[in-house]
Image 1 (cartoon, rainbow, N blue to C red):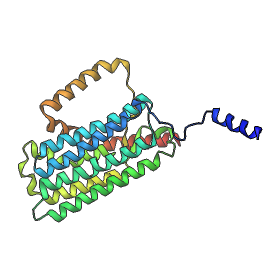
Image 2: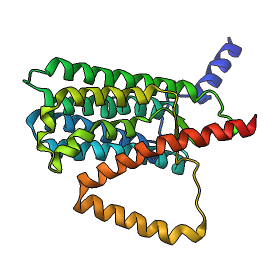
Image 3: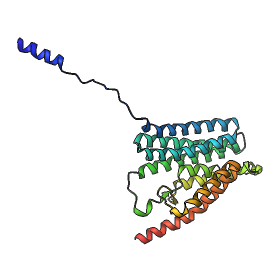
Image 4: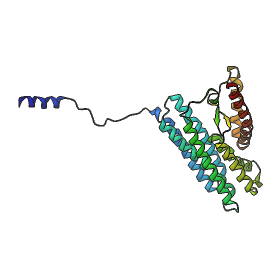
Length: 265
C-alpha cells in the first residue's frame, strides 16, 4: 500500500502537458493572405458597381485587384511566408476577380436587356470557364520543375492579363467609342477569342525571373514614373496602349521560345 501511495504522490507532482496549447503565428505569416482577401473585396465591390451602372468605378476596382494580386505574391516571397493555403486562396481570388467580375462587367455594360444578351452571356461563360481551366493548369504545372528555357514564359495568357484584355471594349467605350455597343456580336467574338488565348499553348513573357542591367535603372525609374502619371491622367488610354503592347508581344514571345527550344535540342 505504501508503494501505491508513493506512486500516486509522484504522479501528482509530475507536470502534465496541456492537451491543447494555444497556437500562435507571427503576423507576417497572415499579411499575404490579408492582401488576397482585400483583392477579393475589390472584385466583389466591382461586381456591385457594374450592377449599379458605375462602370468606371468597377474598372478601377478590377485594376486594383490586379495590383493586389501581384503584390501578395511579392510580399509572400519577401517575408518568406509562402504556403499552400495562401496559394489556394490566391487561386480562388484570381478566378473570381479575373474570370467572373470582368465577364459580368462586360455583360452589364453591353448586353443587359439587349437583343444580344444570350450571346453576351455565352461569351461571359466562356471567359469564366477558360480562366478556371487556365488556373487549374497553372497549379498542376507548379509540381513539375520547368526546363531551363521555360522559366521565362507562361503557357497561355495569365489571369490578370486575361482580365485586362477582356475589358478592352469597355476601355474603348470610355475614351469616345460610344457606338461600340451597337456591335455586340463583334464584342462577343472578341471576348471568346481572348478567353481561348488563356487556355492556348502560346508561350507568353513572364517578368518573374527577368533582370535588367544596373546601367538601365535610371531609365526604368523614369519610365515607371511616366506610366504612373499616365495612369493618373489618362487611365483608359494607358490601359488600351498596354493591352495593344501585350498583344503585340505574343508573336515575339512565341518566336523566342521556339528559338530557345531549338537551341537546346
